[in-house]
Length: 106
Image (cartoon, rainbow, N blue to C red):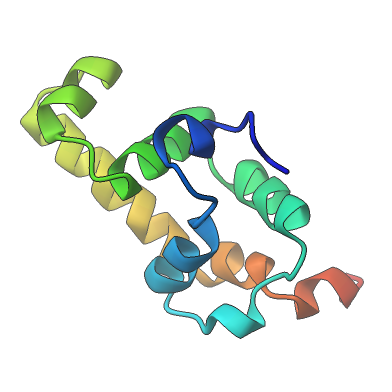
């Protein structure tokens, strides 16, 4: 399941659930239970570049490799990381990852 994802290119395990809980400051039990659906919500909320940065940064890839992959300098990389993790903490994004968000009809 989810073997050919951006996440799995850089991480040996599907541990994005733990990373999301950590960065979104949420209990892991409150996240969507189905991994495929949770990953789909993650892909919908982040740009391709942000998702790749999240996967690579979570895999603890060196900043030098991140800079060359994204063609950024130190300042641009720090801004991109700041923007990414700020986005994950926003209520409109992080609340989308909750199990209760699946049953809510707006």
